[in-house]
Amino acid sequence: MNRGATFRRKNRKRDLKPYILIELKDAIYRLSFLTYTPVKDIAEQLILNSIQNKTILDSLSRHFKREIYLNNTWYSGHLIDGPIGKRAEGECERITTRLREDDYEDVRKLAYALDCSTARAGSLLIEASMKDMNFINSLIKQFMAQQLSEREMRELRDLMKFLNKQDSEHHSWAVILSQIADEVSVPLSRLREAVAEFIKRKS
Image 1: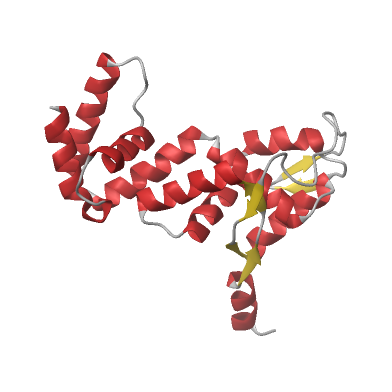
Image 2 (image 1 turned 90 degrees about the vertical axis):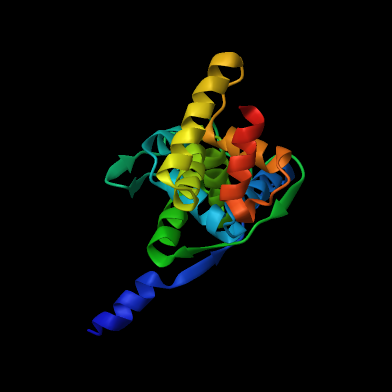
């Protein structure tokens, strides 16, 4: 057996082009803009978060028609909440991403259990992750930590604590980065300068 060929097959990526609601697509494009990450990579991360998240899978399993074994767990096909629709209700547009072969296979398994297309299963996973604020926050926090020094991150944390004490609205990493993009004239490609100006304005 050619081990190198097997490794390449496992790491080869396959296209997945789910249809998602337009407002969801707009939110993903904004997340892409805020983090300077390609849309296809954002979509991949959203799918991977959901397919590895037991809470999300447990929720989707209420719509399973068939049993599957996924992530070391057996899910039975009881169809507690009825079948899912073939497409989300509302105006949809296609989004494109690429998944490694083994990740694509996990999405295909999920589609089999839900009795839907692989693309539809991908859209459900993307939507679930976009509602997972802990994941979105960690994604943005990771991006900012890569761009900023420890001191700059500490200043942002202190600012968030101050804003959360003063305001009834919760200021997460996602909210802070969005406010920086909206309020500061410095482009996010120069994040350090943008953060410095934002902190100066809020101080």
